Image (tube, rainbow, N blue to C red):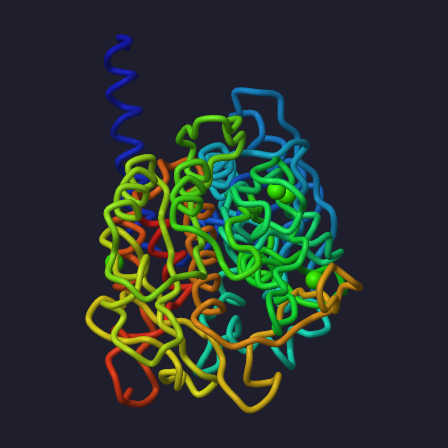
Length: 465
Ligand SMILES: [Ca+2]
Ligand SMILES: [Ca+2]
Ligand SMILES: [Ca+2]
Ligand SMILES: [Ca+2]
């Protein structure tokens, strides 16, 4: 018989085997089912354990022999062994090394080629659905939860904590709160006037908050509070958790006693986003997102717009609080500037907070809290000092200042969920946030956009984009 004839016969035999398999699907002779769904999990990219179900009566010796045969097809050295039988049927199989998706699927197909195999699947690693152990979470942080008024950060945390992303918080600076300071990167103090700064000098590299007490008002610790909502340390059995508790905050001190000048804030925007400011060393950690829980009564000025456009051109998303004047946001800056995400505040029923600015320039809404007590306000890291810093504590506050960091934290989660893909542009971030909103549970007396941000949906959309 010629060589080509042999080949021909072999080909025919294969065709017949295929026909038999098709004709007797489900019979003992059929190859096993390969369940590949788990190989496409976004959470797991390597696999070292599998579950193999053999047909009744397959001896342990035959199982191990079949496994050894399956490993032979691997390009690199691989062995596999039975670990134990499962109560529901099937054997746990341990591979000698972790396999990537492609190799895992090839290995599973080799195993399933044994007609004694009913099915094979990856022994996937499950993770707890994230409920943080921070003690204030359950009672106070309704804004991050999945109930009606929340942004569903708890669900987004099953995908990402924001690790690897930098958020610049332009505010009063920060304090060394033990539930925050681990997530603080080097910042800068842009307050040029010593009297406003209260730290005895003008600009300097120390962005600590010395206290912004002014006339008859005590220090607010506003920057410590907003930074905590963005990225307080999470799952550490202490206090609160930030929306992006795995992200880092660059504190940019721009507000002091009585507030801060636009000129200093504009420089802060440029620096935070990686631009250069004369006389100030470059920011080693340019931010993917800037949070500005600040504003004043004016239309958007040329200086603000130029600074914001500069940040956006460097890929930094700019999130701004709409203001707390129960008025149209068009009269407030920088919230009414182009190229920003202007954030209105909702209460713990999920509708407009009584103080929140409103109008067509609002982009999205987020929890800012409203009276009467701490369970309906926003709780975050704080301090008990009336003028200079005292002991750390947790403070409840209400405002669009509290709503904006919920959004900035969500943007950090979105960018982290990109993994190795290019970061989203600020325009893409805004578009995804707006197309993934939670509808308001009731009507608002004034327009504040189309809904409350949905961190879980936004993260999923950002990962898939
Ligand atoms: Ca200073
Ligand atoms: Ca300083
Ligand atoms: Ca904590
Ligand atoms: Ca906008």
